[in-house]
Image 1 (cartoon, one colour):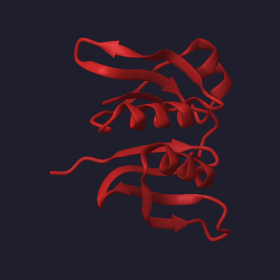
Image 2 (cartoon, rainbow, N blue to C red):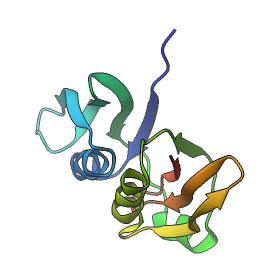
Image 3 (cartoon, one colour):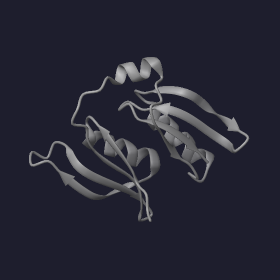
Length: 128
C-alpha cells in the first residue's frame, strides 16, 4: 500500500509552485478545472515518488485565524529531506507569508527541524 498526503487549499495553482520550490518537487499529474484557474487534482513528486497531492478547497476557511492562533489541526510531516540545506530551503519557502510555530532547531530525534503553518493554512513539520 502507498500513502500520499492530500491538501485542500485556496489558490491551488500558486500553492503547487510553492510546494515544488520548498521540496524540490515537480508536478506529475495535473487536472485543472475547465477554466484552467484551479486544480481539481494535482500530484507532486520527488525523483518519481509521489509526496503530495493537492486540490482547490471548495469551502472557506480563515487562514489569518489559523496563523494568529497557531492552530495545528493536522500536521504534515516532511522528514528525511536529506540535509540541513534542504530543511532550511523548505523552512524559508513555507514560512514566507505563514507563521513559525517552532523555529529551526534540534530535537533528540532530529538534528534540524521546524514547524510552520504556511500561507495556505497547512501545518508542516520539516526535518532531516
